[in-house]
Amino acid sequence: MNLAQEILGARFQNPVLLASGTCGYGQELDGLIDLDTLGGLAIKAVTPEPREGNPPPRVAEFDAGMINSIGLANVGLERVAEEKLPWLAGRLRRAQVLVNVAGRTVEDYVRVVQRLDPLPGFLAFELNLSCPNVEEGGAVFSTREDLLAEVIRTVRPLTRRPLIAKLAPNVPDIGRMAEVAVGAGADALTLINTFPGLLFDLESRRPVVGAGSGGVSGPAILPMGVHAVWRARQRVTVPIIGAGGIRSGADALQYLLAGANLVEVGTALFSDPRTPARVLSQLGRYGRRAGVADIRELIGAGKVP
Image 1 (cartoon, rainbow, N blue to C red):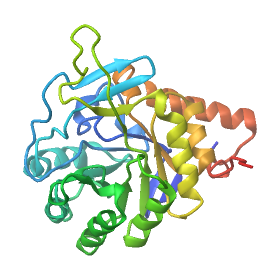
Image 2 (image 1 turned 90 degrees about the horizontal axis):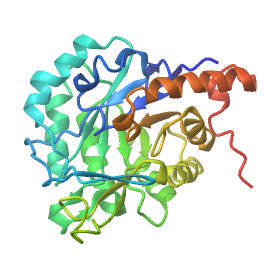
Image 3 (image 1 turned 45 degrees about the horizontal axis):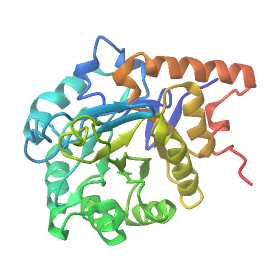
């Protein structure tokens, strides 16, 4: 089965990417994974200033996945510009790189995009819009149509690179938010980000992560992610990256059938860095068994009554 696609003006040699926040800046997994065999990766979120993140513990497992409260810890804009992107530009030849951008204000997104846009080493900006806007009392950008549109409309004139809007799942109508993002200038979507969640340690009766609540990821959110992609695909025609709970080729196929063009593997990397290679191998075997010559035949091919 041909796994390659031309998307966002570039060639993705296969549909499997690494999700932001799970692969660092690529260097952290270099040697464990041959990054250039992947479709690409989305690097750790970049904010204007370095961030230490939330107090530990930051990650806790439960039976169906993981809850994390990293707090967008990152080295900051200047180190990404001076160290991380040059390494990626020198290391990768085939895998595409997405720069994940986060911020507390619209101006934060502007600063990151303006600084990084002239630099080589990446294809597109993936805007993490699940951040709370401090200017709006903590309202999450992607849960309000006006805030979502404002970020994308403000950033759009600043770059000719593709803009990918990464949306939060905890909204009444993800299809509508997808429409708003595309209408404001997004070239593609990533669906979904983590769900808000809370778990307690039964001995201390305190939350299992230091910040209290956190983001739920892993197998538990697979059906919700697939549903979000399906709903968005009914409303928009731009490329969609499916993310959430992917551990196998079968999981990736769920997203493709719902309408995703690409998928991002995230939480599964923590327990097994070989997951992306396994997903690719299983996709190939499925194609041979099902007589599918090209992966594009599968995109949106799910039959929902």
